[in-house]
Length: 78
Image (cartoon, rainbow, N blue to C red; front, side):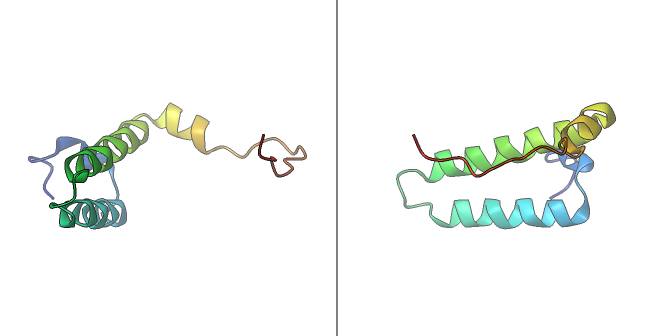
């Protein structure tokens, strides 16, 4: 994947680009599946959102900081 094809990938690490390509390939492999186009679209949208977060250092810091030391018990199903 080159940045010229998908410019936002320049904000991803090499490992993240590899993961993106693997997910995209898996989604495209099911081309005969009725949801294939939606699956490919979902993968691209999700990784583009990740790249946008990584492009903003303040947002990245805010979203990756540790949660406060509180009791985060397992949530029960309603």
